[in-house]
Image (cartoon, rainbow, N blue to C red; front, side):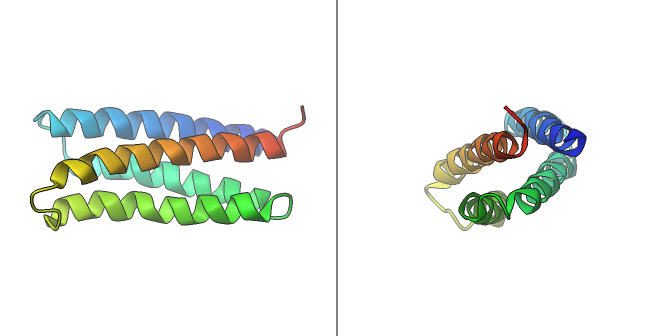
Length: 116
């Protein structure tokens, strides 16, 4: 159960770090985007590990988390490609919202694994 708690906190702190770095980057601070991506990657790996631990108890939720976690970096990378011409604000909004949904799903996974 310690591993679940560690993964839960890794998702929380990694997401907060990624969010703060992403906001700072969008506001023009001289922050390398790779720092934001590193925090996001750590968060996703912890999310996948939690989903793997939950797979036997709640396979539907685990697969939902796995699919959601694939959308998050895809939205982030699409912002960099410029493929959203004219509606880039949509990608800038969808990316953090999908990430926050991933954090909420991680909390649900952890609840399934931790005793009440």
